[in-house]
Length: 553
Image (cartoon, rainbow, N blue to C red; front, side, top):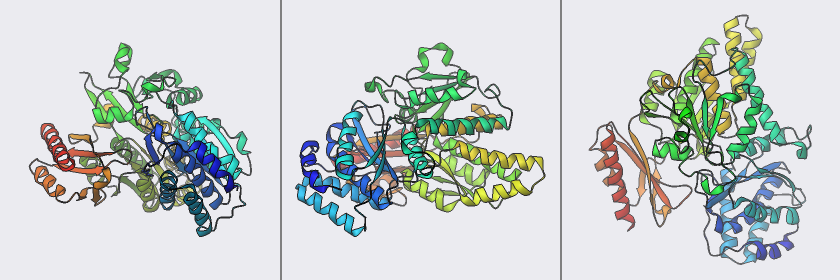
């Protein structure tokens, strides 16, 4: 480690000064023009994180997911493929802000103190796995990131260039799991593709399923004009059903179109079809299933149109409940009632979904703060099969060691064919899911497999429960940090008195529910409103927006 070289690199790379950064729910995220300094410091933190893990590979992904094209961001991935440990988020934030707002010597002092306080062996060579999405700014920011890795830490760098965020999570974990078998430089996105292609194909073979005909004709995939387009187009070459999968909004080579009137966030918030569906009359039919990725393909939203061309949304809540019903049935068939299955939601979950899970499926439900790191932790610690999805479509399923042990033991002792098939299905299905992080491609495979095995059409999936009318909106504010919450972000504690004013409005409508929270990615507050009547919900949303505007002006 050669800290004496940092100063010259610092002066060359860190152009953004007098700026405040925050490592939010999905890492650092901001306008791409101001991210040079934070990329520089993220390289340092990622290297130190790898060194603290005795040189295990740590991932760094450059992406701004569903944000507009002019934004970008960066996040660090743990050696097991999970999100950066929360204890290190503040370290990343502090170093970025010291570097942007103090003199260089303060940054060096912070780094040295960090090495001492965490007892990091400075002789360890870090290993860093990097990737980026298809934004125009990503190559420039990648250069800022790499500027510290090699000259300062002599880091071993595996650069996967353009790929989806979940692919980098998977490959980071894969590299660490197979470091004694496969050289790091031999690990490519092909390992990701082969793993999930094989899992999906093996699962459908158990049921002799070869196409989609029992459930829908074609699968229409909106790629948000992002990196998910080339990656998934290449991925489906390993699926027998590839000719039944059609693409729209796959123009990733034109970054200015990214998330523009398309993608998971657009479909969820606008609750309507994305651009591109109406361009081809053959795509617009009630016999198809539709889905939308977000910009870096870690979220997915499904939808369909009925015979009257009415749009129906199948969001993260619907995905979670579909999986819960399917997996509970398999556990019952296998007589594995002692395996604990549960769903983790956030306050954004539709009230009808929570009622359905609790009262109809009789499956436990937990609620956490917004942000997949909170849901992931709860799913991992509270359940043997922990299903977590934010309503926006970001989520996955975690399977515990206890799950694998009990299913495998059952498989070894049973002579009952139905129990054997249920156990084999549980094990095969767990391999279809990307357990490191929410993954649009893997979640798509899981949903399609569940529908085909269950012989369920999209409208039948939708009819499991009816969403309460709801509306998600946002208000741009000068300082999002003014808005503080409690009760898993369902109640405001600041600004003082605002929650009481909101409660007065909420209590006026039947089955009313609403909350306000600061965005984790931009200077805005997000407003969620829900009620029995759609017009009441719209009015409630407008009235709360007016309260917020009066508060900040």
